[in-house]
Structures are given as structure tokens and as C-alpha cells.
Image (tube, rainbow over all chains, first blue to last red; front, side, top):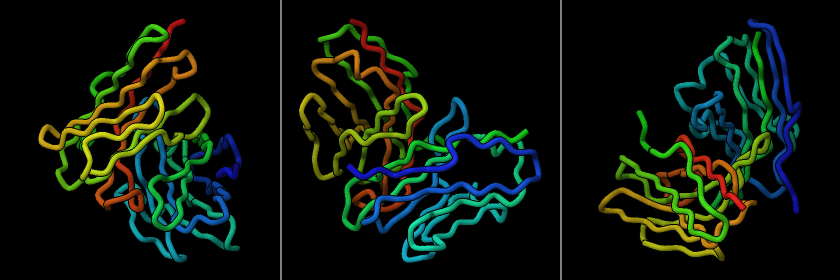
Length: 113
Length: 114
């Protein structure tokens, strides 16, 4: 059964550095999402992406964040200048048109020191 | 602003008995609800969903009940198995389906004891 994959599984970075988190969605998915979960807190929506455009974003998704799907396969989340409070699990998710659920990847644990 | 609330952070149940996980929501615009299960170091895995036009949806051992007037839903697992031990998240959407951002509760950690 196809799965959403994410790399790396764990990323450690220094505050102020740029990070790129990568996701490979299931091939027939059309809608893509990034969520994050700070330790001990709920899963929070960051951004949704459809037809090569951002369709919705949350207040968390400020100018430090960007997403792209550069090659029609990978879906990336870039944080330009990381802050301590960006430390969290970041989940990529995808779904097909008319689907009833989003399929999540295993997550990338980002640790900002 | 907790639009989706899971007031029980944990629940412990004996194997073979019923597990009931509860979820409340405040936004009357939500019209689609999902339950996800999450094991440590894994992403959320979809379990079952329900549209606001229904009050019950069943899939094997899992049944979700929706009470729109009370803005309350619950997940019943019968019979509970040790492999069901995980964190369960309730999520809601305003878009009549899953396409759109999901608003999650904080989760309930279920422990099923043999």
C-alpha cells in the first residue's frame, strides 16, 4: 500500500539557520498539507497546497515559511530562519480529489538549538 | 482558542471491554469529523469519519456517534484490544469533506490492559 514518506526523520539545526523538510506524497494525491505538533500540544494546521498554489494558510505560516512542489513529486516546507519555538514534529499530508481523509506521513522531528 | 476539545487526556480500559473516547466542538460550521490514531514516532492514521448529515458511522470494531445539537462526538471501540493502545485525535473540517485544513483536539491516550 502506498505511503506518504518524509525526510529527514530528525533534523537538528541552530537558531537562525534555514531548514527544508521534504515529503513525497502518494502519487495520485492532489491536495497537500503541512501540520505541526509541538511536544505535548495538539496537531496544528500550517498550510494547504493545490494546483501549485497555496490554498489556505494559518497564522503560524508567516513569511519565514514557504512551500513548493518543485518537481511534481516532492513537496517541501522551508523555514528560512529557524527560531527555538519552531521545534516540533512536522507532518505532511495528502489526499485525492473527493477523498474523505488525509493521509499523513511519519513526520520530521525538528529540533532548533 | 480550542475549537475541538478532548477533555480526557488519558483513558485506561481492560481488554475486551468498551473504550469510549469523547470530543466536543464549538464551531457550528464544522460539518465533517474524523478520528485518527497515533502511535509514538508515527504520523496520525485515519480510523473513521462522519458527516454532519449522519449521527452514526460504523466500521468493524469502531463506531463514531455524532450529536449535533450537543456539538459532541464519541468513538466507541468494542471490544478493545491491547493493540488499540495509542493516542486518539478527534479532528473537524468546515468543508463538507476532508479537503481543507483539519482542526485537531489535543488527543486522548488510550491504554488497553491485557
